Amino acid sequence: MEAIIALIAFAAACVIAVPLTIRVYSRYQKKSSAATIGNAEEKAREIIDDALKTAEEKKRESLLEVKEESIRAKNELDKEVKERRAEVQRSERRVQQKEENIDKKAEALEKRENSLAAKEESLNKLKEEVAKLNEQRVKELERISGLTSEQAKDYLLKIVEDEVKHETAVMIKEMESRAKEEADKKAKEYVVSAIQRCAADHVSETTISVVQLPSDEMKGRIIGREGRNIRTLETMTGVDLIIDDTPEAVILSGFDPIRREVARIALEKLIVDGRIHPARIEEMVEKAQKEVEVMMKEEGEAATLEVGVHGIHPELVRLLGKMKFRTSYGQNALKHSIEVAQLSGLLASELGLDVRLAKRAGLLHDIGKAVDHEMEGSHIQLGVELCRKYKENATVINAVESHHGDVEPTSLIACIVQAADTISAARPGARRETLETYTSRLTQLEEITNNFKGVDKSFAIQAGREVRVMVVPEQISDADMVLLARDISKQIEAELEYPGQIKVNVIRESRVIDYAK
Image (cartoon, rainbow, N blue to C red; front, side, top):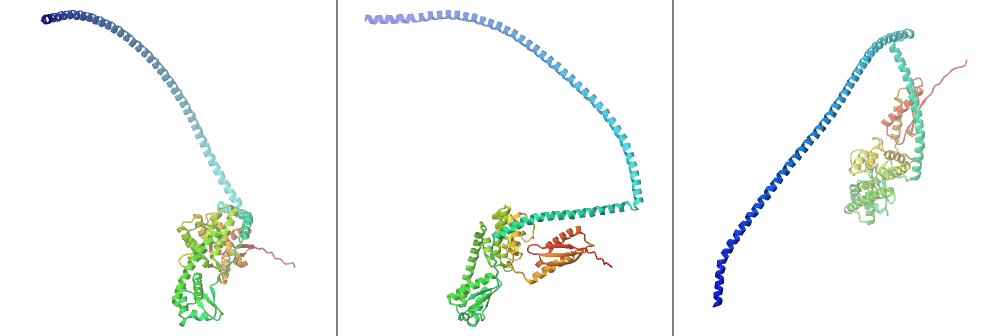
């Protein structure tokens, strides 16, 4: 109980003491706050005073710096102004000097113009005097010579023309002789070397083929009942069968070698088979045509391998094989093309040119002959079209186009193909020429030469390889002979077609006859 009373008493005392304590503490706090505020105000006033003093000092320093900067800028500006004034003065002095120099030059030019004008006047006077003296001289020369100035001019021009003509003829003759000596020497070496290294056989084709028979009884079976077998064979092949008294042989006659070959193969197959009737003949002719097609392809491939040319279009290879059945003046066209290719390669190697390209051009130079019977145009035009169609080299096309001189060759290889073609065609025994063509060429040669002024008579000799021209000595001088020979050669080249070359030999003969009495 006592404890409870004590506790209650303690609690009451606490309730009384707490408000008193709070009031005492608040009073103390107010006093301390007032003292702190007073101290802070004093410090604030001190800080403000210090700040004002610092600001005044900074202001004074800034004013001093501004004044110094303005003074420095003013000094620099004054210095720059002085320098610019000095530069302007120097420029003025230079301009003044230039003006003075220009004035001096103008004065000098004026003096020079005056002197030139004076000289020009004196020169004009001299020209007038010279013209008068020249006129007097011409009149005096005309009086002395008895010729007018135009006559004298014509006379001098004629003299000069004769001298120039004579000197030109002499120069042409010397240059041609020198060039011919060198060219003939080199050309003979190259051509002889090429011919010696290329020995091709000559093949002479005819218009008939002979098929051997096992016995004469086979002739009757070939003819057939009422001639139906022979008519079928002739109709299918386009070849004439000649069955005469020749023992154990049948002659096939036709101008187309391909048809003749088809007929020969078909007839040989029929003879071996033994069954000869129209149906069997048709079957054998078809087989023979296929065999000939295969043969042409194989012959073309063999030709390219023999020459060593690769990459030719298959159609061109087939046409090459077809040339085995074409002839020119009796010379086999394929053999001729192979020979030209080999000669072209040999000549190209001697001259240091592309041997493969030369062989290719030589092999294809007559490719138009494989189709010229079926299409319109010369073999040159057709060959050029074929080569362009199958994307051949431009050099090859030009060689095909120019190997007979239809166009100008644009490369040495084209010239080589021309030479090789002439060598292959003009060698003895290579080709046959009809009598009409031979006599016509001789007649044309003599007609061409006889049409020239001053020609007395002419003779074509050595099978048309040379023409000798006799001139009238009173009309043609020695200098004129050179020009006449050249003109005749050019006209022969333009009007005639001939293998190889033709020598033009102009002869001028003067004779003086007198009698001793």
